Image 1 (cartoon, rainbow, N blue to C red):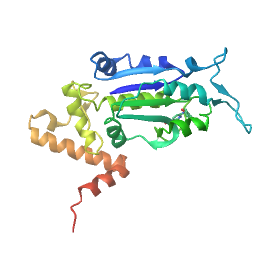
Image 2 (image 1 turned 60 degrees about the vertical axis):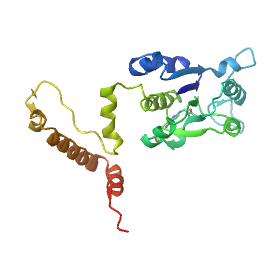
Image 3 (image 1 turned 120 degrees about the vertical axis):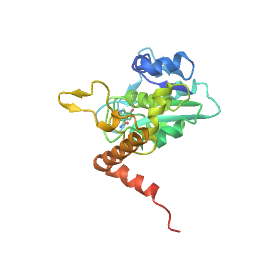
Image 4 (image 1 turned 180 degrees about the vertical axis):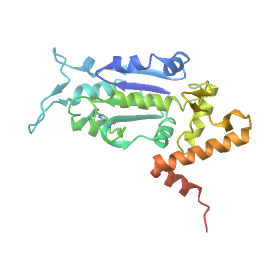
Length: 234
Ligand code: 4GM
């Protein structure tokens, strides 16, 4: 998987990806990361990337030319997808992450300030993706969320232990509670069932906990889970 991020703040992307699991994935060539700065594609001596909106109003608008030229400078693979991180996009979830992980290249457009000149959308025609119904100062955090969540799906990014753990969210339920040493902390004991070594019982306990948690915390997910497990009556 190759990630190309178009951003005015490449350090934000590079710094996050220089740590921990993503760093390891880049070092072992499981993923490849590239940033492109629209400021390097400006044509005036002030390196201007934004301007006041036609029709008036507060704030600035990102100019089309530096973004389109930055986009066109990127070498495109055959199986490529371009996404724009904005509050107007389709919500990111595990299904979308899985879908994005099937591409060989993801090109991401990060905006700042008030937004993009609409002609950037007209020309590049990206798929718009949102992290949720809230506004950030820039698209870099959502782009990093895409990079991180998609990278987890790529073979070789996670170690054996980490990827085994992932299976529990893959079934559409929330995680079961985890415990490590000591057995008792501030009077709170680790559930007895986890200590007896009976793996069938442990599995049952964890599954019940997953269902319980999902039902009480995320009734929307629980509803979907129940529906997908209903036996068809036809
Ligand atoms: C407007 C247009 C994404 C604002 C483009 C980006 C929230 C999200 C921005 C932009 C963002 C989100 C930057 N805020 N909910 N702000 O995923 O990049």
